[in-house]
Length: 263
Image (cartoon, rainbow, N blue to C red; front, side, top):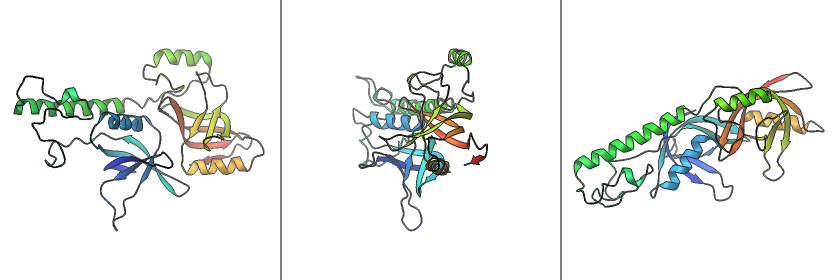
């Protein structure tokens, strides 16, 4: 578990994975890297980087998973770090006409024709703080506790009540699967493993890529021991990222055996 660790975000040029690197090195000078797992928080971080003209750091809180000897991080909260007391040689001078920040230029640049007074600077800082607080409130609201409905009628009723579901993702981020029956399949193009629920009642592709963790290693072993794609009863949490669904498994059992395996 990482809690409020400052660091930056970079993309691996070969694997195209996003990496989080803590700013403060560990003992011995080692600067550990964590592969970021797809999630709404990562989507927000990438959006912040895209609208910022300067390097952005984040204060990261999230869960660490291990898969094939590599560290993976599921970000849960990562507000951008806004430094108003930065040195003059690292940021534009205070009286520069244009100042770009992750929350948007309009919140930081004084209106044209008005002097850049201390009061306007205070207003800009207040606006930035309010923007960060808004992001935190939005993040807290991204974790619904409703379970995925099993029947078409229940799915229709749930869709009418749900106002926070990602428009392009078949299943809302934060939804729970509980012993959902489905098959485990290998994606031949990406090389990843996908869970395909039976009796899927949503729109689009109902399959979900399984996120890397020790439980995925157990699923892979179960698949290798089967002549056909194994039927499993899967439990876990659904996450949405850029219109696609991913599954963080918490437990599964083979439908034909009835023996539970926990992760």
